[in-house]
Length: 140
Image (cartoon, rainbow, N blue to C red):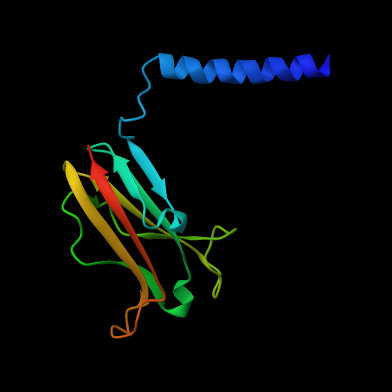
């Protein structure tokens, strides 16, 4: 009985997946929202024109470090407000504790470009960055 129930659950899950494909869900269609982390460094991502690109990177501003966009900001993306710092496991920032710095971009124009970011101290402009993040962005 247990094997039959497991098989039924697997079959139902597969059926739902095939139904989604059959209903016209297209893998080539650019998503309206893309969320990225450091694990996506070096990748190429697609986002729909008018869509949102969210980049969430580990940060610890109490050390003086922060993420900055380097080079020209891609013309196909527009920063939507100021980056926000989200403390890890707390609703308020704890001095010395790391968290996540979140950048939200709007895709404003079709095209392809590179988004480059560096984790650095603003008061040490001649020092090498502690980390970097770069992605190729395609806006459809």
